[in-house]
View 1 (tube, rainbow, N blue to C red):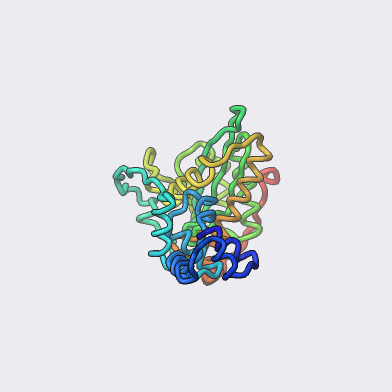
View 2 (view 1 turned 90 degrees about the horizontal axis):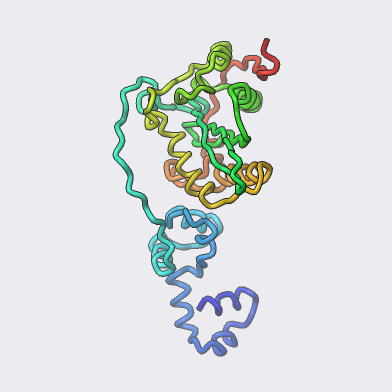
Length: 279
């Protein structure tokens, strides 16, 4: 059936193709109606996507197909994503946690964190992640050998110059985030730093959720030969995540599209100096 579908898409005559493959036209049409003419290659190209997210991508491309039909193909092709058993986590009690101080609009609360990996020769990689909690946009994925608080300030300053400043920024108590340089700089810009209780990553749930997706859909699927390769692939992942990947918490809309629908909250733009310019 798939051979017939591919041949017909190449412009061959239906009657001749079906006669050569010994299929009746009614049998072929019944197959096409059942599976929508879909191919499993789209799913295999994104092996960590579930069938609802793949279905959303297919409908964006013009396929008239329901999730039920996609699930049939999913089950037949053995594409089900293995689910890890989740440990039950406490909600935490910190007043700075995402359950107590949640984001209410675009650029209200950003969150940031670090994640680590290695190249194929064992050299360490460190990645700074910055997320808008409301729109779920990935604002930065800075990959380097090492990243200090000064580098984090420079990355934020570049974002502030392009996008404006958030009201709050949420993080754990890592040394880069609690350094006096960062605290003093954020105070100068009137940005409230929301620090989690030590050992309570669930209180920074939005960035932890992104970390999980980033590892599962990208880091676990790629091998980096060098730093430049890691940077290139990371930037490609960020573009795909923001512009294409349907986000279940946003009604299966990509973060960039959701952000474009959000009302703009105007805040005064302070002078966002890079760390090298701070005296």
